[in-house]
Image (cartoon, rainbow, N blue to C red; front, side):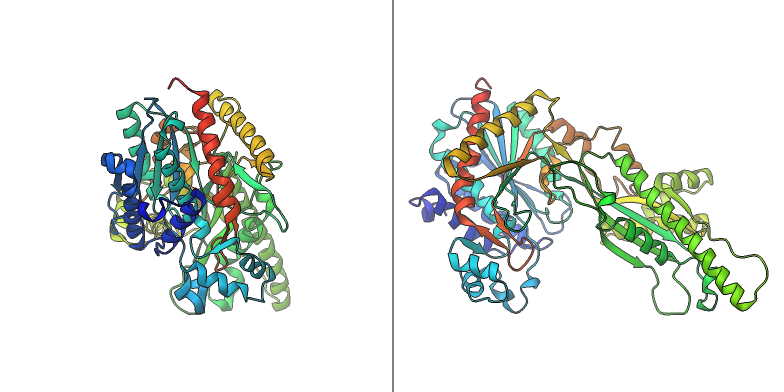
Length: 555
């Protein structure tokens, strides 16, 4: 690969890297992720510096991964023997290509797609972009193979101009970002090993994941000084089944689920209130009853979960909010059914006591506490469920654990159990009360001010990268006390899934997202704006890199 790009200007080098990477189909959960890792390793090993130092490129296989996926690392050491180190990182997987429909065969062909969209009259914006020649199309071009290409271009630049690099540069590419982030979580231990063995001091991690306009006509280029976190807030809803001929005597869990969905889904009342930040509400990602086939019995249970962003809010606060929403939904349902039963019984002339529609609401931790008091062997049952469902989706296993615990306890009372399930992304941001992080923020302000003067671009700094990113696993703002709510309300924590919380806290690397710019990520119109992404951004990242090292000249 080096021979192909060695005589090109850096902007064209980066574009060539991006085109080659996009040409490899690396859909999350396929062996294409392995092919992508092999290609990245081959590109790195083609650089003259790494031909002379082959031990400074290496891979780390993901433990127990059936596909054999791996992280890829390259360390460019400073000629000044400085231990200060900056990490450039990105992910190598993409979402699928089926949304391209009739042109799916061309989903990885930027030139075909540019020609196609230049004639696409159904969307004037994409047609205009394609006709301009300033945009590149294709699955992963924006999210985030161009970001990887920028890191490769800057790494090659510094390998050829080592006198400009006053510290070490560690480049890291990770798989499995598009769902559960196992790649970067495995990398945490490798980063600690490398730090301890070489006595490195990690000053900053720069992610090249994409940024996009936040509204129509938005021309600002966003830089994010941290990462939004995420919890998957889950509800296991046990109703009271009944024949449809006696429907008002039952408790339909789908009705409770509907009320919870209405209260949370895309409702800004459920979001945090932080001025001038991109703060998003919860979104329902799954809602389904557990009936296996048709009959005239109402549903017994319903399972639903929500993407729930964390910015400053603690996991404890999230749990309390979710329980409060569930309790309100159950109270509303009881009042509704009482009113409907009153109308029904008056119409029928029925006498006698009305049913009750009380529903208990408890956290998974509270549910387990009740079971322990009854002598239910919680850990044993959990292990049996996990071992019996080795290939099941994490979230479904969590639900099956609760079902098995319920069955063992003979507990069919109407209830809502609130819990968490994978993935969990910690949140982080540069903090004013941490001197090194505050200094990083100040340097960024200065770098952006100079870049605006030089380029005419308008930059806007935000705290929380809004799209969820691997940066969440390099630093975390939650304390160990605050994460207790996650561990104790997470069925199977440490068995089916866990996050290396203590190791992340040991790293605590300040993170920035300085991303390539484009539109429509995760859609068939995904596209990248070349002049900024390949021209302005690489210089911006190099300026930040050199300023950080200049601020710490002694290592």
